[in-house]
Amino acid sequence: MTFGTPADLTAYRERGYLVIPGALSAAGVDAAQREIERLHEAAGEGTPPGETTFQFEPHADVRAERGRPVLRKIERTDLVSDLFARLAANPRVLAVVSAILGPELLLFRSTLMLKPARHGSRHGLHQDVAYWPLEPPEMVTVSIAISASDAENGCIHVIPGSHRWPVGEWGAIARRDDAAQTDRRDVDLSQLRDVSLDAGSAVLFHSNIVHGSGPNRSDRPRHTALYAYFPPTARYMPGSGDPPARTYPVVAGLDGRASVTLRAGQSARSVHQRR
Ligand SMILES: O=C(O)CCC(=O)C(=O)O
Image (cartoon, rainbow, N blue to C red):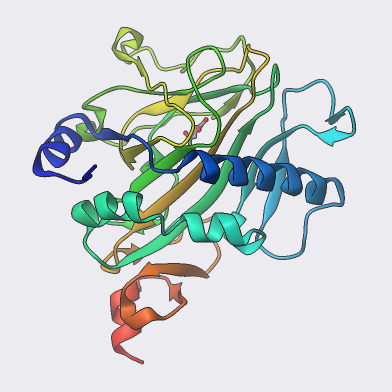
């Protein structure tokens, strides 16, 4: 099946998101699920040095269950897992992302969002660009379902078309299961749409779209591998909580270099040309 057709891109531009069926084969899903098991064991041994972080589920009443840590997410999976590093360059996903952002791509995030059975908490509504230090804020996130996801186990939900809204303030993202999806009064929650996915399918969304996810009230886990991509023209504009420089992996282009370190005001294009 071809992805990234003109019709797909028109749908993406209108709604701000697009489902990519079958990004991963059944064997690919099995391997990713086994890798998540392995990472849970690594998390039990403590967070490795560097940028990778294992974040425990803040709203679970236990830190571990049956000997396994109850994790909410793992950031910079590309540094601790060859499998999740390679998955960032999944050809079906990259075909669509490069049709939107261009052929040269860097990775802003490589994250596992984890919702163990009965534990994953609510992810409040937000726009990613409100938190990300890149200008212009034209990025694409892809969330690849490693387990089937639906409203019962806390799938992603989006407000179609909200990628055209101005960037707003959203408050806390990690929320208790019984908390509201947002504290904002001006957001019409009847517009929210659940994006159910089969294991191996993916949803690609604009970095300005209003989205979040529900709690996991089921006996099934809901795990997803999330990648955010940006083009080499985007400039690093650190806010007060950001480091003065950050190194980003290159996924495609820039003459095959592995990563680029950006200081305030720099883009990967300007740094690469100066080599
Ligand atoms: O996958 C989820 O549960 C939500 C992820 C999300 O909204 C984000 O990381 O920006």
